[in-house]
Length: 293
Image (tube, rainbow, N blue to C red):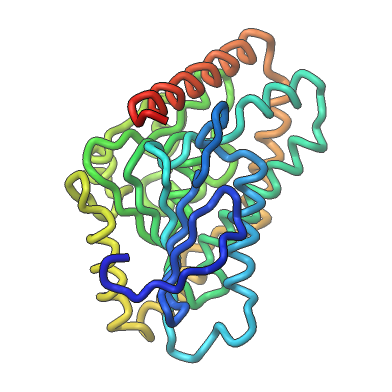
């Protein structure tokens, strides 16, 4: 970013923009790069495949782990939204066709990703969500899976799934309960509200709140501070896994409940889902019109 020497990798991910420093210790992953007309900034299968492919590559790359070397991955967005959540168009189609296996496969990919992120990508990585636009549903769950959430002011964040009779099934409950009480976590899930980043910061869910336009600089400074105490932050990854574990098995059991609940939704709920898809599409088109693209 501003204060690191960039290592410009060949573009190999059609839905991501990747920036890494020359030492390969700080990686910025911007979702929704190259968003095409009609595509929404949500967890489309192509985005998920690119995200988990990149995160696996930097985790498994030979020679990456050096004792005492702390790495960082920053999750951000090239869209005006951080992420609008699950692919509701896909959900609606799979539910109508009663395709449980495909719905479960989608949920499993989500769980594998957020579990990997939450566990520090193998232990030596600190994960930071930089939220500069709305983070809804699964987008909010992605941010919650990170060790630190940095959000700019006046950003909307929430779990609206209850509006169509569903609940957020890819980590929201487990991750929220590590930040707030179970009672408050259930309230946030069941009321379907979109909260401001200021409200969530007051609750202790957003870690760092900054004015609009200052998110990147704030994350850069946070990374520098953590790098100065690398051993401590690597150790804290291990401590967190012991003191506040979120197991893959727990996440998958909840995801299976989500799948079965989704398959039980009636036509009214599915029509609501369809209306949300149309609203998301209009939002993207309006953004493109303002940008003149």
